[in-house]
Image (cartoon, helix red, strand yellow):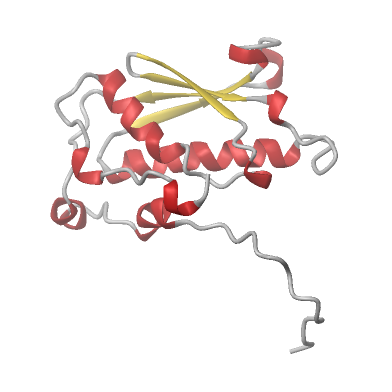
Length: 164
C-alpha cells in the first residue's frame, strides 16, 4: 500500500470508555504501521479481552533476502514497540510477557509463532487529547512519528557516495 492510501489512525478517537478488547484493537491500528523488511508485514495479533497475543507469521519470511528469519523477527519487534508506544501515549499501562522458544507451540493462527503477550491494565488513567498528553509527559515525538513514517522505493543513484 503506498503512503497516500494508508489510513492514519485518529488519536482523538481513542475509545477511552470502551471495553478492553475494543481499546486493544484501537492500539493495534498503530502497531501495524510499523516498518518491516521489504514491507512483508510478518505479524499477526490475537485479541481476547485485555490480552493481545503477538505472532510472527513465518510464512511471510523472505528466504532469499532473510534466510535465517532475523529481519522477520526485527519487523515483529517494531510492531510490538509501536503498540507499546501507542499504549504509553494514551495512558494505557501494559505488561509484556515474551514467549521463550521452548514455550512456543509449533504453530498459532496461520502457522505463526507466538512471540509475546501484552496485557493491558484495566485501571489506567486514559489520555486522549494532546494537551493532557503534554501535561502528563506522554506527548511523544516517537508516537507522532508512527503515522508519519514513509518508505522510499525510488531507484538509487548510480553515482558513488562521497568520502565526506
